[in-house]
Length: 598
Ligand code: ADP
Image 1: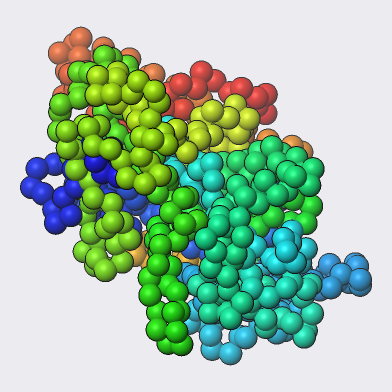
Image 2: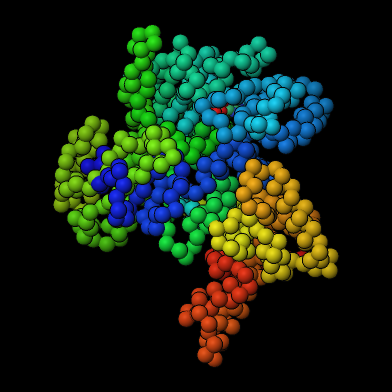
């Protein structure tokens, strides 16, 4: 693959800077100052079961209809009493409701520690909850079945950039099947993991697991083969795809606010650092009525293209997996194509200009766990570009359009058409209204003060209130301090991260909701919050303008300490106030409140 992409791999490191750094597990290097890294800081933390549930819940509070693709979830042990009370309340109102719940340990994977229950009292509380927090979730009892089996979908999503947000979805994915015919949960079958859990890592151990040479049969198939089958039965598969795209975009929108906080902490604005991208694995279940449900997001999806086969009892061998190869090779290849730093230049200027420049890639094995690096099979070398014929399915006989040659102005002409489809910003207009928490995160980051911090101190919170003109006769600064202390203390006792003290983003969001509800009574929550965000951005943009003018006039008067540009002037004004010089674009652009303000 590397030859066809025209890149060079340095598996053991390189002194000179590289274009792309490929980490095995997570973002961890603080000594990369340029190029692109294939992991976002904080992504692993963000997609843990509890953090993901919290992030989606914030969005469910604001937009319940839009976020009903994620099962109702409670966080254990903190919300155990709430879970018991809410289940009892619904059961009292509807005695025919016979729910099932699934308990999933936080940070678990491959079905590890997961079990089903019919009643909150069945939760295995003894000792384990304290040591291992978990999420308990409504179990989807009526999944779509194929060949009488439950299955889920693994889709690969490329988060190409956080700011501006750019999302791509692979056109094909995997469908992973259970190995025991499905029955709705009953006390008799609750513990049948091969019936209820679709994890490949579990089902591979079932005697019924079928390795197939075809992509449309067996226990692991391509998602496109499922869609073909559904289409032949008259299902509107365009609608299924569009619902899935919408689920993916909404989920990423739920994750981005906190990711931005991680990002500015690890890669502070204004200092040299890499940009990031990441391939995510989305696990999705289709309900019988074809509605997609988000099960989880994987920050480090397996890119293995082999599977273990038991040749004779106890004797295993790794054999190539056609389905994995078909889906995953295309995802990696096209991610590298999209992240190619020369691609944009090529597209914009003359295609031949950059053809002979060496294009360097450096996969950095994860120092902590280099054995887990899953992509070592991808060697990346920029040889004489596009001269070698490509191996296997990528070969020119399959893919090269007639006439493609070294002089072809399109250096990708010999490659298969790209499998990653851009969905954002393509559909931004339909989804931008959901990005309210993102705008709150921009405000939060502005007031964080010391770079590298992820929590807001009491002074930062007070400055936020003052600069956004939120205090009034009915909200004194003393009340603001009490609000800060109350919410911060509660969140710090709940979250596992006790590294720094102060207000985390979720606590800030809670405080923001409270302030919005006080100020804009009577409106639905999302309108209250949107009005308050507008108001804050408006006041901050006025402040910035004023600082800009002050900076100019003081410079004209010969007093411009440390600021030779308007931006510099703004920066020094902000720094004098203890603010970071990272005022948000949205704040700058905002020309005033868009909604009627009270
Ligand atoms: P893990 O990270 O351990 O794989 P998942 O959240 O993916 O945990 O759950 C494991 C499996 O359990 C899923 O692949 C799916 O088959 C099943 N599952 C998880 N959540 C639900 C749910 N809410 N309803 C129905 N099935 C579920």
